[in-house]
Length: 204
Image (cartoon, rainbow, N blue to C red):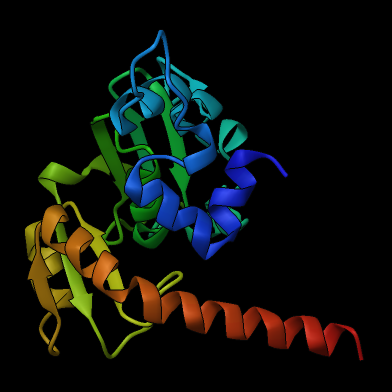
């Protein structure tokens, strides 16, 4: 099994990412112990990502599926994210949930720009906007993409206010990201359960 597949599909692998490296890979280099940062600098998961200096061009052709859940990103254009790391590698996800996974796995590459679909746009396929200029609406009463609590981003603050009027909470990207991590365990349990049920039905 490839390291990326192991890390993405096992709880043990995710724990190893959090600690910085797998024990078997923590070997001395030139007679010196290798630190977690040294290991991830040389073997970081961003080396699996595409280098792309024009990430907004032909976005869906280059990043059709979310690499973490397999969902078609254009179908979820209102919640998709596009992360441009400071080494010009790019990761396209279907949601803030999966963007949070990418940011955790690629901890030694700083995000240069993060885009999100503008849920308030009128177009069928929502345009991207820079998350620093957007307002997220967190609403536990509405399910979102890959999460039981919706986390939609709006480029227009007035549209965010309108979307939050029935009990939603306004948040910055950083605040929404913290909530995505807080929801991660529960959301992952529920996703696994739903997918297991679908597989069981398909096998009948």
